[in-house]
Amino acid sequence: MSYLALDIETAGVDPEEHSILEVGAVIDNGDPIEDLPTYQRQIHNDTVIGQRRSLEMASENGLLNSDLPSVKPKHFAASLKGWLVDEGFCDSPFGRDYITVAGKNAATFDIPFLKEQMPHFTDAFCVRARVLDPTTLYYKLQEERPPTLDECLERAGIEEPVDHTALSDALQVVRLIRNAKQQ
Image 1 (cartoon, rainbow, N blue to C red):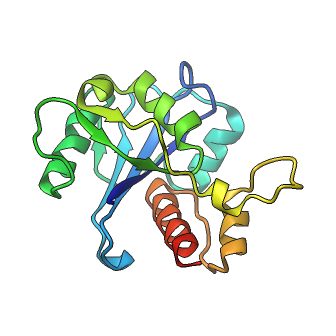
Image 2 (image 1 turned 30 degrees about the vertical axis):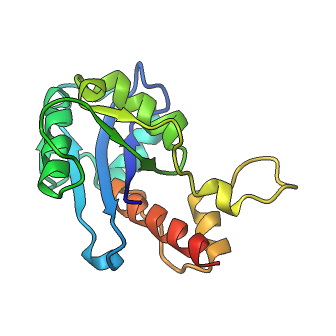
């Protein structure tokens, strides 16, 4: 089963208020990780609204002054859908495609942000109810909270730095899922 590893970087935690800054996606079709199709776009917001610490982190990570291709929120769904069609993940640029998504906290964070801020996202995509979250694969019962992405990677024995860009984090999700499947 192919799935779409998806990650966003935001200027805060409130999808009704804080801006999406970047979107990264990887189609895991079973090919070697370095050959997987990737999508990375900076979101061109007319005004960026966010929490002070989130904006500082975004600035430190280069998300506010990036050389990445950019897309306005109103064009994002068509941009992502066009890429997915080009890569053979979706059949047609028209209509609504059912997609399986993977991502750390994607069901409770990334997808609600995309539905709230990206016009036509729900017209183009129906995200399946069962979202693959690698956190569940590396969670320990005695813990009070789910592990961070860094903690998941450490538990998986994957020595890759987390730089908190959307594409890098989406690739880490693929690595974590593949690692757990090999166990």
